[in-house]
Length: 140
Image (cartoon, rainbow, N blue to C red; front, top):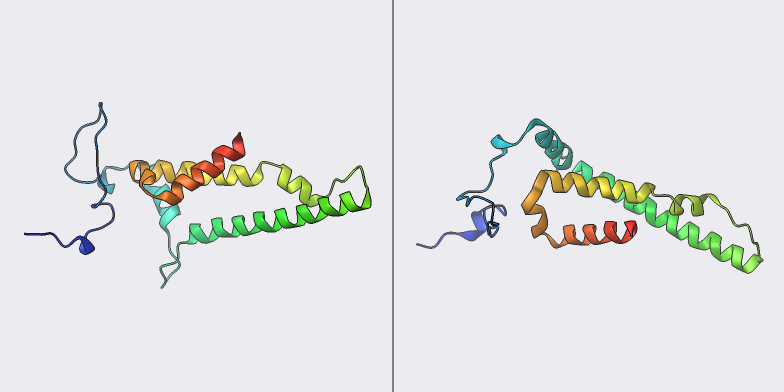
């Protein structure tokens, strides 16, 4: 008898290949086994707006990403003005914002939080690999 794959959760469909030191598990990890810190972190990551399926944490990170993009636009504009004006000392607010590590620190904290909560499942989604790439490139 075939199992209806469309009704299984994404966690149940994940391929699990144990490492050399791990035990083989028949079922995905239950949240009953999670510690308090991991449960609180999961609530932070997964809390939704009342009556919707919109995740609050995703809205917050999207807002940070949007502000980062705006800061880059203003930064590029200010740098271009400095070049056309021939100004040597070109310290503006936007250049200071983009040269700081504020955005990278926020992205790194988000990445660590997601890795802490989702563990092996984190590595399955391609968008998470893109986040890892962005943070690593930003640090290097």
